[in-house]
Amino acid sequence: MATIAVDPRADYLLRLGDDALVLGQRVSEWCGHGPVLEVDISLANLALDLIGQATLLLGEAGDGDRLAFHRDVLDFRNCLLVEQPNGDFAQTIARHLLYTTWQHMLLQRLTQSSDRFLVEFAHKAVKEVAYHRGLASEWTIRLGDGTEESARRMAEGLDWNWRFIPELFEVDEGLQAAIEAGIAVDPRAFEDEYRSAIGSVLAEAKLEPPADQRPILGGRRGHHSEHLGHLLAVMQFLPRTYPDATW
Amino acid sequence: MSGHDWPLWEVFVRAKGGLSHRHVGSVHAPDSELALAHARDTYTRRLEGVSIWVVPSNEIVASDPEQAGELFEPAESKIYRHPTFYDIPDEVKHI
Image 1 (cartoon, chains in turn orange, purple):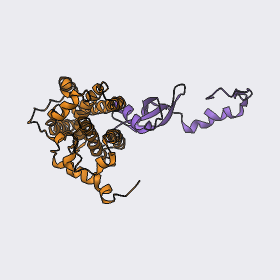
Image 2: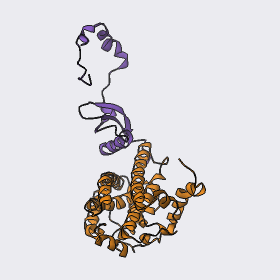
Image 3: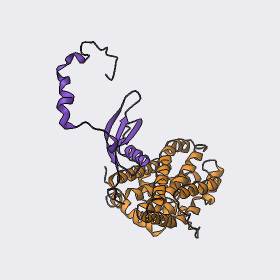
């Protein structure tokens, strides 16, 4: 405990950094379990990109390793979408599509931030994330417009993750302060563009957008699903059990 | 999804501008776009390339190893076809 950021910039770095860290850890759970070797490698690459982004962001927020490995669930600032379980490959792709489409639109705008670090970060990460978004879109289209089984699984994967979209566009006091300081991007500025981009991919995939469900919020304030605790237990076990261990 | 029925694609990577694409291996993929993605993720992770080609493996027409004698051995005795009688300046690369 005791790492709750109050400074809007540090808070923003934690939000973006925790998103990348948690999603990177989630995707890395596929390593060695991918449906085919090529997809296994592909998913591992996505995970490594995200862990790299988290390293930069959390390193700028403070001691990156301490933030990653010695914080408890309540101190994590990631959105709920990224901590959702992998499920099957389609559910993982659904989550990746919904998050990286948002992340890509955010990073494109973050290149205009008043904060020099974030501008440099955005220029680097936006290329990685463009690839993530493209790959997730391609797979969504193939699974949706594939066999009866793949279409069903893709629809179920979207259904699982759909209720976490509104949180991506929520602006609370902390984010508002960072937006006013010119550091952060106001996500509401691209919500329509986001909905329409996701809609286009789903149309190409011959899938109906899931019905809007009751939105679930709270990740940015540390109110997480039970899934995050399990993820952290695996991720943090080693450095917590052997605090002096070095690579 | 097993991937057993995915076709095989041969992967060619251009290491840098001015060099030819070279065969580096193969990947399985359901179609050409994902074949490119798989090739990118498998063979260019360490900055190995600036351009990738993928070609369906079954589109490659190969010579028959049994014909190696008639195809290749006749060239062995014709050393005058090698430009080894020229001095190549040091600054000329990639020959």
